[in-house]
Length: 375
Image (tube, rainbow, N blue to C red):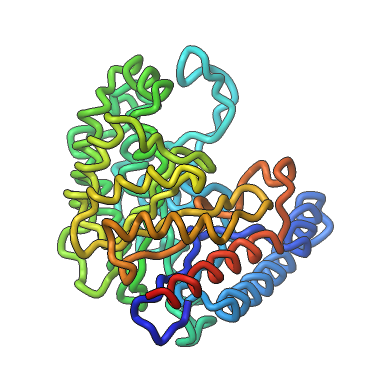
């Protein structure tokens, strides 16, 4: 949010936006063969162009393309790396009680940097659209997400699908590191790593499944820190890196769980990121006490409005949560955000629509104004 007061908290987004009806209709028409890929691409471009203008008009100082082009929040990025492609699995089980009916990652070689990664041209296009009116953030799945996913689908034995399992962490980190540096050369100064595994490490069901696969959650915690820090080794000082934590698409982590707190403390204190996007239950402000683990100088991005449902939260509740957060983090290092991206799979059931997301952003802006006036 633009403000002359340096104490004013930023208002931001997780990254994804719901598509407008125009794009949803175009997607269906493309599936039916009623429009060509070229015509669909023109509609998609127009929607993203207008989205950037709307984000800036709404006062967002760091914008994204809303992930409008994505098919999957994670695999779209991974499939642009060298040594990876999509594989469709329709039978069998990952775990004994989970039928496998979705795309799995597939390695054709060791993971590597791809100078032709499609994200590069897309980012350059967004930077051109922003035209200096706002900065552009590039979102991508955390490198730890790829590492953890590989362990999970192989029951802790990545050698079953990866040609050099002893080098998996280093290969992932190197591919990410070079990709990020190319984005930096193109003008990117804001990277966001999205992670669902960090927020699930202490979930009983997730622990059960990982242990069934021979994976120790404590060991994987150390590995996740390692792959993140190797990825960020030697990064430019003016490249801001955010780690976004969630339990899945819409659920928040188990912040009250003592094991979660232990792993969170390790992550916050050791991961070489500048900002941490942490979603909270606005009705449980005591959860924000975990911010006492945040190292001095790090930015806390507080997810305080639910991006998966249309109902509006109370501005007073948002402000109240921020006041709790301010016991541990100065207001100048606090940002306000939805708990998750707006592009959720079950939005029809939840009643979301294109304007719902802007109402959520405006709610955060109202809270920021109140906090700014109190500062």
